[in-house]
Length: 73
Image 1 (cartoon, rainbow, N blue to C red):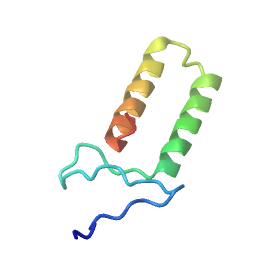
Image 2: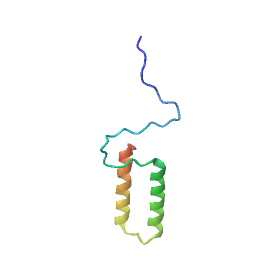
Image 3: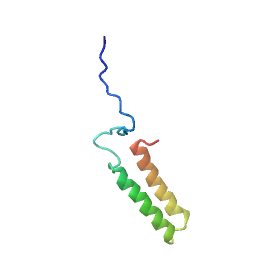
Image 4: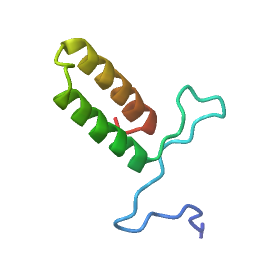
């Protein structure tokens, strides 16, 4: 009989994202800080004079790069 060596996650627990090498292209940002960054950036863009499409596209580019790094997609 073979004993199973890997542990299965408990229901309701989150799995850690994929581990990257030491020379990663992006810094490791905690999820709470990333959500705060998104919220503050959205408020700044909504209530400032940044109603052109360029700053919004730059913001989305930065956010999607972070999301891909975290392994969301």
